[in-house]
Length: 264
Length: 270
Image (tube, rainbow over all chains, first blue to last red):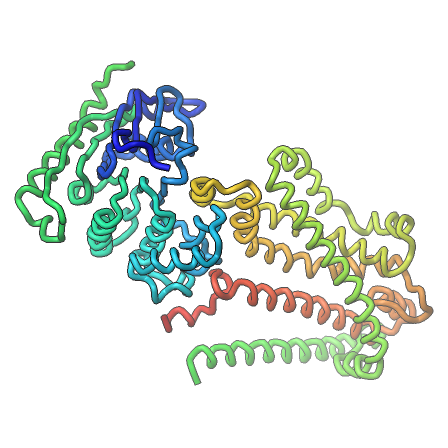
């Protein structure tokens, strides 16, 4: 299923995207994500960060350039990819465990195996007691945990996350950030994460890509060398702050020259 | 007593009081304007007529009830089927959706005689009329429910390589169930109206015995206005019964997950 170790998890080569009418959304994006990396795309709204995830998942084709996921065309790689949306996108008519089992069910996994994997995934996010609950009975943070369990149940090698914690309060967000890192350390998947929170980007990532808008393009790149395992206390350190400030400046710079942008 | 039970009791008391006020007003109108019984019978006369002719009213309810139920069940089945086709093919939907509007706008009174001619007088043609009049809301609401699924859900399914029929039956159809019930509620009332309207034309195969529409015609031709009122009351009750049956079914299907079926005070317990 998985190609050799040397093959990058995601390869984006000079990709442009424009929808049928109007301005290009992305222009000349090249990005390689190695296996095991946690890469965060950050940028102001309208810079096409979500579009990058849509391209990697094959939900929308690029207008130019090429994308490979583990050496495959994005649509053929879906078996090893899971997508976490900004909203928990739980099916309200299904219980928590039925929601988590959705992917396995659609892929035709037999019932006993499904139940076993679902229970394990729910355990992982600490929601084993809520297996029979309906989504409407859960808080926003719990719903997102279910969404994470649903994404992990199919044992993905690549996780695409589109501002998954944007709608949560800060407490839940911080806690889930730590949890995501713990899960990644255990399961060793690769992550491409989209956010507009600098603190979140610095805390989670091994690498941060700053995007500039109109059209979306890569503005700057930061390696994050903070040691693992990262715990809540990391947020209070000077290194964390220093990097956050750097990324923040870069973000402002990405937005500022907009007025003076040279027409392409 | 819990506050909610108190509230419900108060609401019920209000409804009863409003009904009593209506009866009093009705009786007052008779006294003040000296209305003759063939124009406006007293509430008491209507009640008496309802009791004394209870057996024929019950028979009429049974006949009309069967016709309405037949029409309603058919419109649910056909409506859901048509909606599934509409949801599956945008092309077919664009082509045919405007014509379903005709179902809504066609004057049922005008085409009832045609249907009688084609299907033949009797319960079957009345059922067909009930079916036609209740079909449009089924199609409109169910189709709307099927196609108004958030894009992210579709993407979620696509990420698991879901087939088009998996998306239709595991995502779109359950998502459409609340809308389907909205359609059913409207359709249930229309089916009864359709059946009664149909009977006005269809008459009865048995002399002196027929559904509510037929009996209403009969009562009005005999100037038995108290009986006429009793029959109108019976028709209303039949409509209510259909509506509440649908409501119960809706609650049964949705109470676990859907907002509309939530008991408001259940929230505070969570």
